[in-house]
Image (cartoon, rainbow, N blue to C red; front, side, top):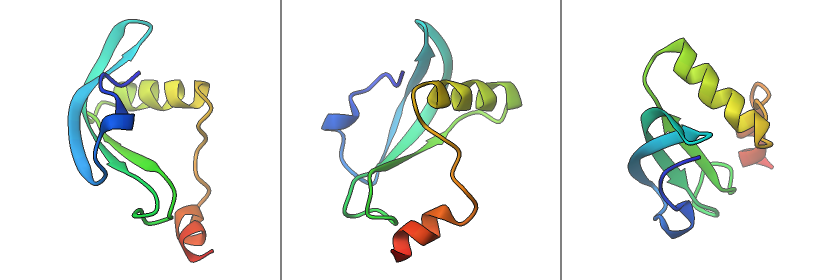
Length: 83
């Protein structure tokens, strides 16, 4: 889905690349990787900064959900950091 290998990427660095779905580029994005244990929650996480189009945002979000991600509950990140 993302054009670069996140296993080789450094934590807390923004990566420029593309998000592809079924070999079609959806958007050029900045992806910031936060590796454990140095993230807010102590878990691996990413932030994706894409263009502001609702269509682009929803397409990326739906693709991530199809791959097994889910929408975080309100306050979930703070709760995970606390626990």
